Image 1 (cartoon, rainbow, N blue to C red):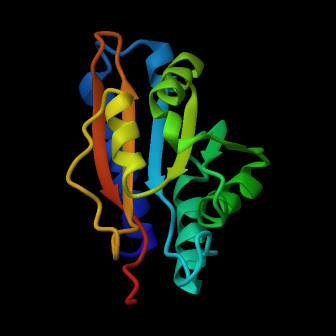
Image 2: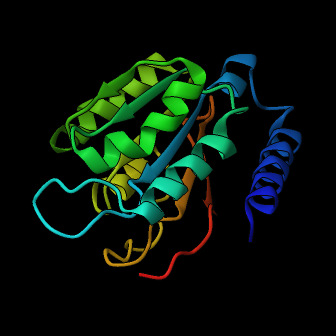
Length: 176
């Protein structure tokens, strides 16, 4: 699936969710959405490697995909690969990149829920599904550490205490 197809799929899913749930969704709920991704492909070596060329391309694809999603805050772990994944969208939207501690997911999730808005969170293969769960969403299957960099969670909290989870794939699949 190319970028245009991915954007169209995301738009259709979001429109479907809004149309399906609009009678029960309040105005403030429509404004709240959490977009969670694992960092893009990283270079080999070291404990804090930068993005590979494939990862740089994927981070650009993420920025293109979410540029019209009304993101008002971007959070990242304090690792090159996560910050560099979030950076193109932060630059495009003129937003400050904020850091969070993946060891404090429960408190971070509570802060996000209290904050509301439309938020991108860039993390890692284990904390990202855990954060989805702390936000009331469905974590899905375990992320394949070696080759899965295209998972995009879209979580929308509802007034009844539930959270709608949509799991999408974005960007091109790059060969290692």
